[in-house]
Image (cartoon, rainbow, N blue to C red; front, side, top):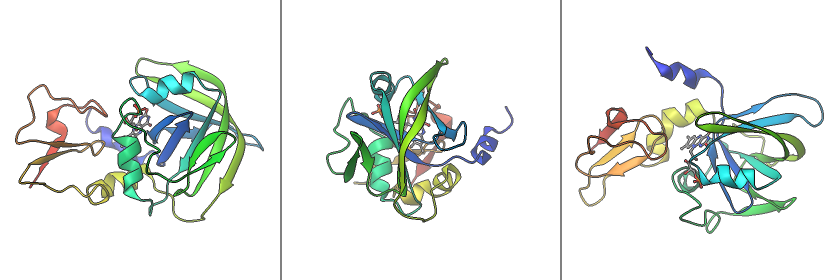
Length: 199
Ligand SMILES: Cc1cc2nc3c(=O)[nH]c(=O)nc-3n(C[C@H](O)[C@H](O)[C@H](O)COP(=O)(O)O)c2cc1C
Protein backbone atom coordinates (compact mmCIF):
# COMPACT_ATOMS: atom_id res chain seq x y z
CA UNK A 1 0.00 0.00 0.00
CA UNK A 2 1.54 3.35 -1.00
CA UNK A 3 0.06 5.55 1.74
CA UNK A 4 -2.91 4.47 3.83
CA UNK A 5 -3.08 7.95 5.43
CA UNK A 6 -5.42 8.86 2.55
CA UNK A 7 -8.10 7.13 4.70
CA UNK A 8 -7.72 10.03 7.16
CA UNK A 9 -9.38 12.14 4.46
CA UNK A 10 -12.63 10.21 4.90
CA UNK A 11 -14.53 12.68 7.06
CA UNK A 12 -14.86 11.01 10.43
CA UNK A 13 -15.52 12.58 13.79
CA UNK A 14 -14.42 11.84 17.33
CA UNK A 15 -16.98 10.30 19.66
CA UNK A 16 -17.37 8.58 22.98
CA UNK A 17 -19.44 5.45 22.51
CA UNK A 18 -21.04 4.37 25.79
CA UNK A 19 -23.22 1.47 26.77
CA UNK A 20 -24.01 0.17 30.25
CA UNK A 21 -20.92 0.55 32.44
CA UNK A 22 -18.36 1.10 29.74
CA UNK A 23 -17.43 2.68 26.48
CA UNK A 24 -14.55 3.89 24.37
CA UNK A 25 -13.42 6.53 21.90
CA UNK A 26 -14.57 5.77 18.36
CA UNK A 27 -14.17 7.51 15.06
CA UNK A 28 -15.87 4.82 12.96
CA UNK A 29 -19.40 6.22 13.16
CA UNK A 30 -21.66 6.92 10.21
CA UNK A 31 -25.22 7.78 9.42
CA UNK A 32 -26.68 4.91 7.39
CA UNK A 33 -30.09 6.42 6.60
CA UNK A 34 -31.97 9.70 7.03
CA UNK A 35 -35.46 10.71 8.16
CA UNK A 36 -36.79 11.33 11.66
CA UNK A 37 -35.22 8.25 13.20
CA UNK A 38 -32.12 7.51 11.14
CA UNK A 39 -29.92 4.46 11.42
CA UNK A 40 -26.43 5.05 12.80
CA UNK A 41 -23.57 2.55 12.55
CA UNK A 42 -20.50 2.21 14.75
CA UNK A 43 -17.62 -0.22 14.25
CA UNK A 44 -16.11 -1.61 17.45
CA UNK A 45 -12.94 -3.69 17.63
CA UNK A 46 -13.54 -7.22 18.89
CA UNK A 47 -10.65 -6.94 21.33
CA UNK A 48 -12.29 -3.97 23.07
CA UNK A 49 -14.33 -4.62 26.18
CA UNK A 50 -16.92 -2.23 24.72
CA UNK A 51 -17.60 -4.84 22.02
CA UNK A 52 -18.70 -7.34 24.68
CA UNK A 53 -20.83 -4.70 26.41
CA UNK A 54 -22.45 -3.70 23.10
CA UNK A 55 -23.41 -7.32 22.50
CA UNK A 56 -25.07 -7.52 25.92
CA UNK A 57 -27.04 -4.28 25.69
CA UNK A 58 -29.92 -3.08 23.53
CA UNK A 59 -29.04 0.59 23.65
CA UNK A 60 -25.96 2.71 23.21
CA UNK A 61 -25.07 6.40 23.28
CA UNK A 62 -22.72 8.40 21.10
CA UNK A 63 -21.42 11.66 22.55
CA UNK A 64 -19.98 13.98 19.91
CA UNK A 65 -16.67 15.60 20.87
CA UNK A 66 -15.80 19.19 20.00
CA UNK A 67 -12.35 20.62 19.28
CA UNK A 68 -12.34 22.17 22.79
CA UNK A 69 -13.09 18.94 24.63
CA UNK A 70 -11.01 18.23 27.72
CA UNK A 71 -8.33 15.88 26.26
CA UNK A 72 -8.53 13.85 29.48
CA UNK A 73 -11.74 12.35 28.04
CA UNK A 74 -9.79 11.06 25.02
CA UNK A 75 -7.06 9.66 27.27
CA UNK A 76 -9.47 7.93 29.66
CA UNK A 77 -11.79 6.46 27.02
CA UNK A 78 -9.28 5.91 24.22
CA UNK A 79 -6.22 4.53 25.99
CA UNK A 80 -7.68 2.48 28.82
CA UNK A 81 -10.02 -0.45 29.10
CA UNK A 82 -13.09 -0.72 31.31
CA UNK A 83 -11.65 -4.15 32.14
CA UNK A 84 -9.10 -2.25 34.27
CA UNK A 85 -10.64 1.06 35.35
CA UNK A 86 -13.96 2.76 35.95
CA UNK A 87 -13.85 5.29 33.11
CA UNK A 88 -16.72 7.32 34.57
CA UNK A 89 -15.03 7.96 37.93
CA UNK A 90 -13.77 11.49 37.16
CA UNK A 91 -15.81 12.34 34.08
CA UNK A 92 -19.05 14.31 34.33
CA UNK A 93 -21.94 12.45 32.79
CA UNK A 94 -25.66 12.85 32.32
CA UNK A 95 -28.07 9.92 32.38
CA UNK A 96 -30.38 9.87 29.36
CA UNK A 97 -32.68 6.86 28.85
CA UNK A 98 -30.38 4.89 31.17
CA UNK A 99 -27.33 5.69 29.07
CA UNK A 100 -24.31 7.64 30.26
CA UNK A 101 -23.70 10.67 28.09
CA UNK A 102 -20.54 12.82 28.31
CA UNK A 103 -21.43 16.33 29.54
CA UNK A 104 -18.34 17.90 27.97
CA UNK A 105 -19.56 17.11 24.46
CA UNK A 106 -21.45 18.93 21.72
CA UNK A 107 -24.43 16.64 22.21
CA UNK A 108 -25.52 13.04 22.07
CA UNK A 109 -27.40 10.39 20.13
CA UNK A 110 -29.12 7.50 21.89
CA UNK A 111 -29.72 4.47 19.67
CA UNK A 112 -31.64 1.20 19.97
CA UNK A 113 -29.55 -1.60 18.56
CA UNK A 114 -31.24 -3.15 15.51
CA UNK A 115 -28.52 -5.16 13.79
CA UNK A 116 -24.87 -6.13 13.80
CA UNK A 117 -22.37 -7.38 11.24
CA UNK A 118 -19.23 -9.33 12.12
CA UNK A 119 -15.95 -9.11 10.26
CA UNK A 120 -12.46 -10.37 11.19
CA UNK A 121 -11.54 -7.56 13.55
CA UNK A 122 -14.65 -5.50 14.18
CA UNK A 123 -18.37 -5.73 14.80
CA UNK A 124 -20.44 -3.09 13.05
CA UNK A 125 -23.41 -2.26 15.27
CA UNK A 126 -26.39 -0.52 13.71
CA UNK A 127 -28.81 1.44 15.85
CA UNK A 128 -31.96 3.48 15.35
CA UNK A 129 -31.85 6.99 16.77
CA UNK A 130 -34.41 7.30 19.57
CA UNK A 131 -33.23 10.46 21.37
CA UNK A 132 -30.73 13.19 20.60
CA UNK A 133 -29.75 16.66 21.76
CA UNK A 134 -27.36 19.43 20.78
CA UNK A 135 -25.67 20.96 23.84
CA UNK A 136 -23.32 23.36 22.07
CA UNK A 137 -23.25 24.45 18.45
CA UNK A 138 -19.46 24.52 18.27
CA UNK A 139 -16.87 23.01 15.93
CA UNK A 140 -16.82 19.23 16.10
CA UNK A 141 -13.49 17.45 16.38
CA UNK A 142 -12.77 15.52 13.22
CA UNK A 143 -10.49 12.50 13.14
CA UNK A 144 -8.15 14.51 10.85
CA UNK A 145 -8.02 17.32 13.46
CA UNK A 146 -7.17 14.75 16.15
CA UNK A 147 -4.41 13.32 13.97
CA UNK A 148 -2.95 16.77 13.34
CA UNK A 149 -3.10 17.88 16.97
CA UNK A 150 -2.72 14.66 18.94
CA UNK A 151 0.75 15.46 20.30
CA UNK A 152 -0.32 18.80 21.80
CA UNK A 153 -3.73 17.40 22.83
CA UNK A 154 -2.20 14.49 24.66
CA UNK A 155 0.68 16.70 25.91
CA UNK A 156 3.41 14.22 25.19
CA UNK A 157 6.24 15.01 27.52
CA UNK A 158 9.12 13.10 28.95
CA UNK A 159 8.90 12.49 32.68
CA UNK A 160 11.92 11.79 34.90
CA UNK A 161 14.16 11.66 31.84
CA UNK A 162 12.08 8.81 30.43
CA UNK A 163 11.90 8.59 26.65
CA UNK A 164 8.40 8.64 25.16
CA UNK A 165 7.47 6.92 21.90
CA UNK A 166 4.23 8.09 20.30
CA UNK A 167 2.20 5.91 17.97
CA UNK A 168 1.81 8.02 14.82
CA UNK A 169 -1.42 6.22 14.00
CA UNK A 170 -3.47 6.53 17.20
CA UNK A 171 -1.40 8.65 19.63
CA UNK A 172 -0.73 5.93 22.24
CA UNK A 173 2.39 6.72 24.31
CA UNK A 174 4.99 4.13 25.31
CA UNK A 175 7.55 5.17 27.94
CA UNK A 176 10.95 3.47 27.75
CA UNK A 177 14.40 3.90 26.25
CA UNK A 178 13.84 1.47 23.35
CA UNK A 179 10.77 -0.24 21.95
CA UNK A 180 11.10 -4.04 21.95
CA UNK A 181 11.57 -5.42 18.39
CA UNK A 182 8.26 -7.28 18.41
CA UNK A 183 6.36 -4.37 20.00
CA UNK A 184 2.83 -3.78 18.76
CA UNK A 185 0.67 -0.79 19.70
CA UNK A 186 -1.86 -2.10 22.27
CA UNK A 187 -4.53 0.21 20.84
CA UNK A 188 -4.23 0.00 17.05
CA UNK A 189 -1.82 -2.91 16.58
CA UNK A 190 0.82 -1.25 14.36
CA UNK A 191 4.48 -2.24 14.77
CA UNK A 192 7.37 -0.24 16.24
CA UNK A 193 8.34 1.39 12.94
CA UNK A 194 5.24 3.58 13.22
CA UNK A 195 6.27 5.02 16.61
CA UNK A 196 8.04 8.38 16.80
CA UNK A 197 10.58 9.15 19.53
CA UNK A 198 10.01 12.30 21.64
CA UNK A 199 12.86 13.99 23.37
C1 LIG B 1 -8.46 8.50 17.98
C2 LIG B 1 -8.99 7.14 18.34
C3 LIG B 1 -9.95 6.54 17.55
C4 LIG B 1 -10.44 5.27 17.88
N1 LIG B 1 -11.42 4.71 17.10
C5 LIG B 1 -11.93 3.49 17.44
C6 LIG B 1 -13.01 2.94 16.70
O1 LIG B 1 -13.56 3.53 15.77
N2 LIG B 1 -13.48 1.71 17.08
C7 LIG B 1 -12.92 1.03 18.15
O2 LIG B 1 -13.38 -0.07 18.44
N3 LIG B 1 -11.91 1.54 18.87
C8 LIG B 1 -11.41 2.76 18.55
N4 LIG B 1 -10.39 3.31 19.29
C9 LIG B 1 -9.76 2.50 20.35
C10 LIG B 1 -10.52 2.40 21.66
O3 LIG B 1 -11.02 3.66 22.07
C11 LIG B 1 -9.53 1.85 22.74
O4 LIG B 1 -9.00 0.62 22.29
C12 LIG B 1 -10.14 1.71 24.12
O5 LIG B 1 -9.08 1.64 25.06
C13 LIG B 1 -11.03 0.47 24.28
O6 LIG B 1 -11.53 0.43 25.60
P1 LIG B 1 -12.44 -0.78 26.16
O7 LIG B 1 -11.54 -2.01 26.26
O8 LIG B 1 -12.91 -0.31 27.49
O9 LIG B 1 -13.53 -1.00 25.19
C14 LIG B 1 -9.91 4.58 19.01
C15 LIG B 1 -8.95 5.20 19.82
C16 LIG B 1 -8.49 6.46 19.50
C17 LIG B 1 -7.46 7.12 20.39
